Amino acid sequence: MKSEDSKTNPWLSIPASDYEGHMSSPLVMQLGFLNGLFEKLMKRHRPENLAVAGCTTGNGFEHIDFMITKRVVAIDINPEYLEIVRERYDRGGDMIETICADVNACGLEPGSMDLVHCALLFEYVDPAVTLATVTRWLKPSGLVSVVLQLEDEMHGKVTETTFTSLKRLETIMRLVDPREFGEITAGNGLRPEWKERVSLPNGKRFFVAVYRSA
Image (cartoon, rainbow, N blue to C red; front, side, top):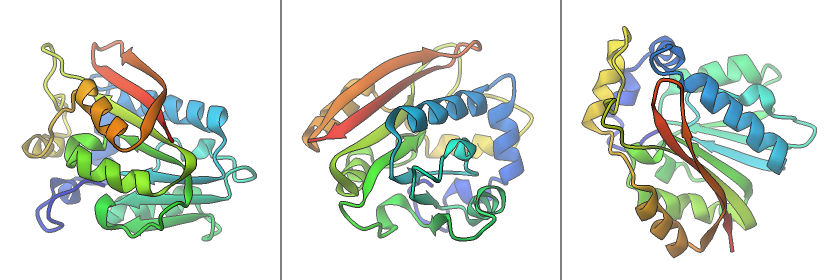
């Protein structure tokens, strides 16, 4: 899911149960938020070819209509997460392609995707490098959907929960300023389709946007 050397990346040491427990905690509330956003994207944009970069355990994949979306590529660095994706959403074994790799090294072919979804990914990678990679995957007029966590004086980057393994992410997590991200997208020939800021009931704030390839 996230960049850094594969032997030292903290994401490899976070069990799926900890990840899902943390994200669904009332203190975090992000699992439901991201699920609803993914459903909205599927209904609004109806991609025929979809890649999810940093897919973790496939939150929201139940909203994929395989009569519309003919190809789904799930990318993550943690093999346990991808195994859960296959068990939950691809029982036939041929509906979802899984790639266990750093996003920048996954080898997805250029010009193949209608939509690439990147939720809470750019905090763990070099945004300029990874966005350039993702943009190459897009078909003409293809879309990149993005969720960025916003800085918040009332909350730490990683919320304290009983799932303490998530605290390891603080060593590699770097919040991305949406204005700087906008400059990177423009430099890659992407223009904003829509964007908004979302505040959760617990006070956590996020920047959500979809960009279209020129």
